[in-house]
Image (tube, rainbow, N blue to C red; front, side, top):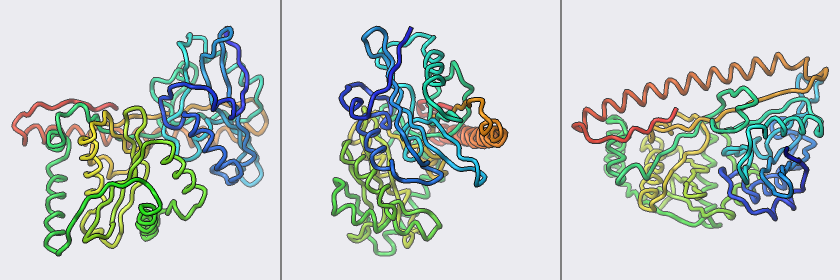
Length: 380
């Protein structure tokens, strides 16, 4: 039998544990909540309240579940309370039960029963769950997102990786645009910097050009920028710049967590689109990963097409949901169920298509490389 109780964020920061995901670190959780607690919209939610659930066996702490209750409005009139992982609303990079010690098979059932009895809500939405999550024993999992990554340690060096993972077309694209850069009298340089006020000025300037394509410039939002700066301060971080004749035209920011390097943010100056500076920047980020002997390089959560040019591995993330039998819950349930099933079908379709493309490119690379030994690393 497990016993459960609630603790404050301040109490959580006094507990030492190893977290599987950046978003389950004590510093990340506290920074997220203090940054966005008063930020109210239908995405982040309103009336936020942290519920940090701790589980004990006797007097031994065995698990932590950082939750947050928030309110969203649907169809103008329905104010619904959601119970979610704290931080999954934006910039989440994976969430799950934080297991301090080994947990029995009954743990999830006991946790779920305690939550239903002690926390008021309409819907339980838990997102960015790994396939290995213990929550799968209780809830149906729906595909929600993917995180393309590279097992750097599976390759002897960058050149072996490039020949075995990059498609012939993509390798030629890199060479062709390199020739164009030189032909147009541009000198391409690669620089790595700490993330400070100097590098931030260049990052902000490049990111602003995203709006040309109708994308959102994160640095226009003070709260989002502040949170990212906290991430960079709390973890070993750097920025890789591509420069043309001394001018920064593309960047990629990175953090190192538990032997894993994670891409946090990237952008390129749209004035230099024809030179494909964005893909050259990501290629240099990968090169630096090999030079620094990182074990795993993740491009973060997202199904962006450009990410799949660089890797043949994708880690899947899931979501699950439940509800309490309340009038509002029952009225809105069909709408949520439809949205979740459609999302699951859409993500599954994208995953399947990417898997087929990866297999096709793998076969092409095997043929063109004269049967070079190739590490099969597709994880779908």
